[in-house]
Length: 105
Image: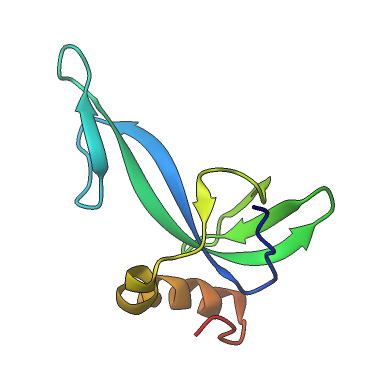
C-alpha cells in the first residue's frame, strides 16, 4: 500500500547503526563476534520538508540535516499513536527549525 506524504508530515525512519556503545534508544542490539562493536536499530523522528519528483521525500532532522529517500522505503513509516503522544517533542524541534506550522498535531 502506497502512502501519500505531504510537507509537514511526521515520519519515523528506522535506521541501522554500528558503534562501540549503543545509546539508550537502541533496539535489537547485536554484538559483533568479538564484542568490540554492536549493530542496532534506532528510530529517527523526522519531518517531511518537501515532496520531490520520482516519489522521493526530503526529510529534515532535529539537527538540521536533510535526507532524500524513496517514499516507499520500508524503513520509513508514520509514527504510532504512542510516538505521536510521547515523542511529539522530537517532531516539534524539527518543525521549529523549519519554521513550519504544526500540521501533524
